Image 1 (cartoon, helix red, strand yellow):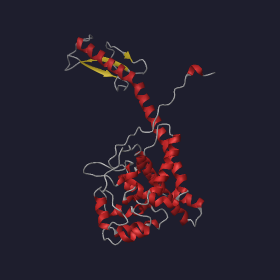
Image 2: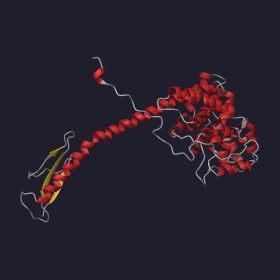
Image 3: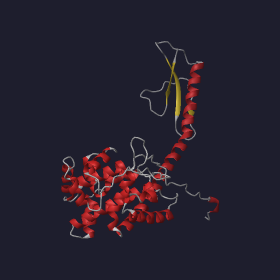
Image 4: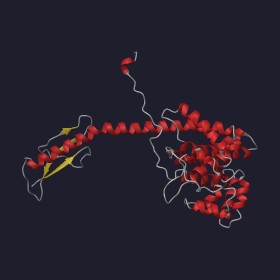
Length: 346
């Protein structure tokens, strides 16, 4: 009994013995199937294919033909994916530009923007997998709760940004869930840049160069990919978010522990917990578990790059900014208009 072998595009190390062969070529690809009979245990069947040999060769040729013909579909899918990525990236760039302009003109709202984003996140309940950064805080019944006192102006800025962004969006309105978190990102970047400018004696040009060279801009990749949160259709349950200015450090620790964060993350998130970061850190430093981390990040902010502080803060925000959310990675993409070649004037 002979065995049949197939030598495709991989060249053989030995010359092919000139035995009867069938060769089939895929029409769009230089793929060949050669079939030959090899003797087994020294027994030769001569120069004739058995019926099974022919069927094996024929079946393999068809399989390669199907694979070859499917390649254009794979290539088209890859191209579509690249187009969608570009669409989302371009849209993000425009969003960030809009937010940068608005926040630069309203620097006093930065602490409120950060707390707004945190409070939208902190409605997440791990046991029921409900709440989280779903935009619920924009509902009037939720923004008016005691824990959100003083955040209306920050929400108004988000509303203003949303109106502008929706006007140029090619794929429908941006969700509050996404916009609130991206507003927090822009607010943080603004504080990082402001710190670099201060280190350069107030020189904006040098400060920008310093932040570009040593800052943490490159750490936002994963955060940016988490783009496609869905808005909830109703407010989240009350009682899930502390009043940060009245909460004890232990209450803060307990609340953050419930969503998987510890003393380290509590310390690095100090700017999110009230309008006066220095006062918040003084309170947190009274706790023996949090104190070492407060000290660490204060020292880091005194360095040129602020690496420990900025990287840990970005990492923490990235971790919690999608709690309970199923990210739609095709959000904000759209079909490109087809060009009617018959109407082109050559």
